Image 1: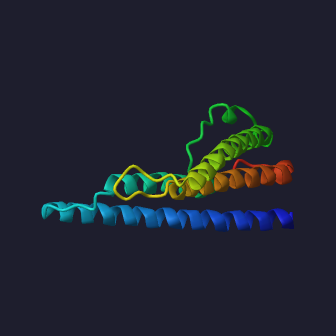
Image 2 (image 1 turned 30 degrees about the vertical axis):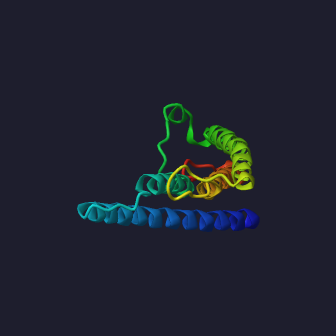
Length: 170
């Protein structure tokens, strides 16, 4: 149980870092949008608003998702789960956590290949900024890994606590 707590603590710390970066990105987006508004009043522009806001939204979503899962803030369809006694819910929770983690791990393997390809080819955006594409792709990949870790820790916690399982495992 002590090992599970250590792993869970590390996962929570990583999720908090991801959430902090997501919050910083929200502040950045606000600042960039306000800057763009002011510049356009004077007939100027940064010319990168759409591109960088898009990168920030994708990164914020993937880096914030693990923290939201950890806190139990994701929308859950509990129609099926509520029909089972609380002591019998853990197999379904375990199954859904493992399957979802497996999907994210599987998806991240392909995304990792994409990041490697973008990096090795020196692929840049088609905009004036010519942003190396592997940078925003890497941020999304890190988010995928964090959600995978969070789901696997959740599954591990369910397995360890299954005898006294309650639906409060987040």
